[in-house]
Amino acid sequence: MKLLSVALALVAAASASAFAPSPMGAQGRVATTSKMAASEELYIDDERRFLMNLIVVGSATVTVGAFGIPYIAFFFPPGAGGGSGGVSAKDALGNDIMYKEYVAAKPAGDRSLAQGLKGDAT
Image (cartoon, rainbow, N blue to C red):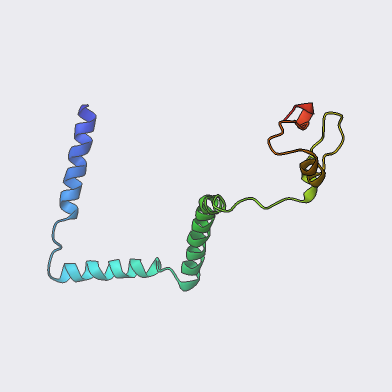
Protein backbone atom coordinates (compact mmCIF):
# COMPACT_ATOMS: atom_id res chain seq x y z
CA MET A 1 0.00 0.00 0.00
CA LYS A 2 2.88 2.34 0.82
CA LEU A 3 4.46 1.56 -2.52
CA LEU A 4 1.22 2.44 -4.31
CA SER A 5 0.92 5.78 -2.51
CA VAL A 6 4.55 6.63 -3.29
CA ALA A 7 4.01 5.79 -6.96
CA LEU A 8 0.87 7.93 -7.11
CA ALA A 9 2.73 10.84 -5.49
CA LEU A 10 5.48 10.57 -8.11
CA VAL A 11 2.94 10.50 -10.94
CA ALA A 12 1.14 13.53 -9.50
CA ALA A 13 4.42 15.44 -9.18
CA ALA A 14 5.42 14.55 -12.75
CA SER A 15 2.04 15.58 -14.16
CA ALA A 16 2.18 18.90 -12.27
CA SER A 17 5.47 19.77 -13.92
CA ALA A 18 4.22 18.53 -17.29
CA PHE A 19 1.43 21.09 -17.34
CA ALA A 20 3.53 23.99 -16.10
CA PRO A 21 3.80 26.93 -18.49
CA SER A 22 6.86 26.96 -20.71
CA PRO A 23 9.56 29.56 -19.94
CA MET A 24 9.67 32.67 -22.08
CA GLY A 25 12.87 33.95 -23.62
CA ALA A 26 15.78 32.49 -25.53
CA GLN A 27 15.68 29.08 -23.89
CA GLY A 28 12.04 28.62 -24.83
CA ARG A 29 12.79 29.25 -28.52
CA VAL A 30 15.66 26.77 -28.54
CA ALA A 31 13.48 24.07 -26.97
CA THR A 32 10.76 24.69 -29.56
CA THR A 33 13.23 24.40 -32.42
CA SER A 34 14.56 21.08 -31.18
CA LYS A 35 11.00 19.76 -30.75
CA MET A 36 10.16 20.77 -34.31
CA ALA A 37 13.24 18.99 -35.64
CA ALA A 38 12.28 15.86 -33.75
CA SER A 39 8.73 15.97 -35.09
CA GLU A 40 9.97 16.29 -38.68
CA GLU A 41 11.84 13.01 -38.33
CA LEU A 42 8.62 11.18 -37.43
CA TYR A 43 6.55 12.64 -40.24
CA ILE A 44 4.34 10.03 -41.88
CA ASP A 45 4.51 10.30 -45.65
CA ASP A 46 1.58 9.73 -48.01
CA GLU A 47 2.47 6.12 -48.79
CA ARG A 48 2.48 5.13 -45.13
CA ARG A 49 -0.72 7.03 -44.47
CA PHE A 50 -2.37 5.31 -47.45
CA LEU A 51 -1.19 1.91 -46.18
CA MET A 52 -2.53 2.62 -42.70
CA ASN A 53 -5.86 3.73 -44.17
CA LEU A 54 -6.06 0.49 -46.14
CA ILE A 55 -5.40 -1.51 -42.99
CA VAL A 56 -8.08 0.36 -41.05
CA VAL A 57 -10.68 0.13 -43.82
CA GLY A 58 -9.86 -3.53 -44.45
CA SER A 59 -10.19 -4.52 -40.81
CA ALA A 60 -13.41 -2.54 -40.46
CA THR A 61 -14.80 -4.20 -43.59
CA VAL A 62 -14.04 -7.66 -42.26
CA THR A 63 -15.61 -6.85 -38.90
CA VAL A 64 -18.74 -5.23 -40.32
CA GLY A 65 -19.08 -7.95 -42.96
CA ALA A 66 -18.78 -10.71 -40.37
CA PHE A 67 -21.73 -9.28 -38.46
CA GLY A 68 -23.61 -7.47 -41.22
CA ILE A 69 -23.91 -10.13 -43.91
CA PRO A 70 -25.59 -12.78 -41.71
CA TYR A 71 -27.82 -10.07 -40.22
CA ILE A 72 -29.04 -8.97 -43.66
CA ALA A 73 -29.28 -12.55 -44.94
CA PHE A 74 -31.68 -13.34 -42.09
CA PHE A 75 -34.36 -11.19 -43.72
CA PHE A 76 -34.25 -13.03 -47.06
CA PRO A 77 -35.97 -16.41 -47.28
CA PRO A 78 -33.93 -19.40 -48.43
CA GLY A 79 -34.13 -20.15 -52.14
CA ALA A 80 -36.51 -22.79 -53.36
CA GLY A 81 -34.85 -26.09 -54.17
CA GLY A 82 -35.50 -28.36 -57.10
CA GLY A 83 -38.72 -30.35 -57.53
CA SER A 84 -37.12 -33.64 -56.51
CA GLY A 85 -37.07 -32.90 -52.77
CA GLY A 86 -40.69 -33.80 -52.03
CA VAL A 87 -42.35 -37.11 -51.15
CA SER A 88 -45.47 -38.18 -53.02
CA ALA A 89 -48.64 -39.01 -51.10
CA LYS A 90 -49.61 -42.69 -50.97
CA ASP A 91 -52.72 -44.61 -50.04
CA ALA A 92 -52.93 -47.46 -47.52
CA LEU A 93 -51.58 -49.94 -50.09
CA GLY A 94 -48.57 -47.74 -50.94
CA ASN A 95 -49.83 -46.56 -54.35
CA ASP A 96 -49.28 -42.92 -55.36
CA ILE A 97 -52.31 -40.65 -54.94
CA MET A 98 -53.06 -38.21 -57.75
CA TYR A 99 -54.81 -35.04 -56.66
CA LYS A 100 -57.52 -34.85 -59.33
CA GLU A 101 -58.44 -38.52 -59.03
CA TYR A 102 -58.47 -38.39 -55.22
CA VAL A 103 -60.72 -35.31 -55.06
CA ALA A 104 -63.09 -36.75 -57.71
CA ALA A 105 -63.39 -40.11 -55.90
CA LYS A 106 -63.95 -38.71 -52.41
CA PRO A 107 -67.01 -36.67 -51.50
CA ALA A 108 -66.76 -33.53 -49.36
CA GLY A 109 -66.33 -34.32 -45.66
CA ASP A 110 -64.80 -37.76 -46.30
CA ARG A 111 -62.33 -38.61 -43.54
CA SER A 112 -60.24 -41.19 -45.34
CA LEU A 113 -56.52 -40.89 -44.69
CA ALA A 114 -53.45 -40.98 -46.88
CA GLN A 115 -50.17 -42.61 -45.93
CA GLY A 116 -47.58 -40.07 -44.78
CA LEU A 117 -43.89 -40.36 -44.10
CA LYS A 118 -42.80 -43.73 -42.64
CA GLY A 119 -46.29 -45.14 -43.22
CA ASP A 120 -48.02 -42.87 -40.70
CA ALA A 121 -51.59 -41.88 -41.53
CA THR A 122 -52.08 -38.19 -42.24
